[in-house]
Length: 194
Image (tube, rainbow, N blue to C red; front, top):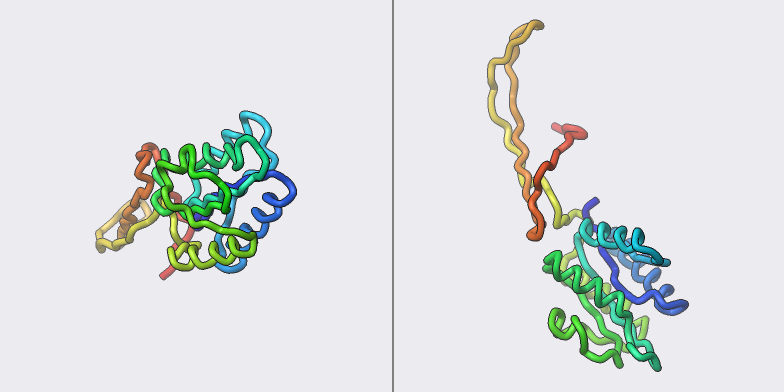
């Protein structure tokens, strides 16, 4: 499904989960983008599901919330997701960092200038602005897409039922995933419109 955003942000209740739901709603209501948010992740199978969701996503949105008074003042898990997104070669990452979060760890090397924010309201406003500026849309996919279609023919075709003039349609598939080859892929034709 094209136009899917992977939202990587803290899930510490109640504030971070609440803001994550608001971001998901904003992306759906304003841009018609589907959004994956990993909530209530516990075991290894859940972590593997997150990895699969990240691989199938088209956009990556990173939010680094400040956790005042904690040893590590932000979500370590989101930084791990950012490292995976970098490994999967996401090119159009939008990143935000709440005031107070130190520029340490992986973000220091990959995303040198995340956009700062002070309040949840400011974050939502900036997300809307950045998504609009970057032209994120529901029709984009970073996976396999049909680049263009060409019709060739007509060709004479015959079988036990008779002889016919036939056209052949060539669909040219483009792989936008720079991190993986499209080996053993199949394209299924659902419908044809003239």
